[in-house]
Length: 106
Image 1 (cartoon, one colour):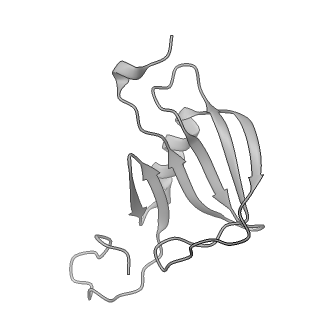
Image 2 (tube, helix red, strand yellow; image 1 turned 30 degrees about the horizontal axis):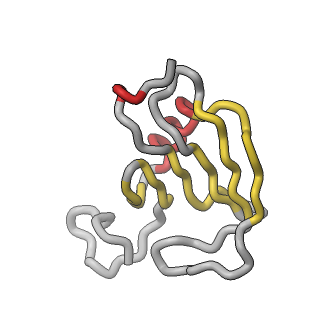
């Protein structure tokens, strides 16, 4: 089970739908909209599409992926490392890097 995703009143072992995400640390979002809004806010042009390694560490916390799409950060963004983790049919995780506003690019 993913830590810290149970809502009040839910049993600890309840199965819930989440979107794995990373922004400094990995977390599991029950509502994917804020995660995807942050991605759209920071992602620029696609930089690379990479096929995932054939051998992956797959756990109940992180799904298997087939592709990683890496994006340039927008020039007005203060984060680096914007990426989507995909299968043929789904976005399975989102990464929006980790920098503070003092790291804003010129």
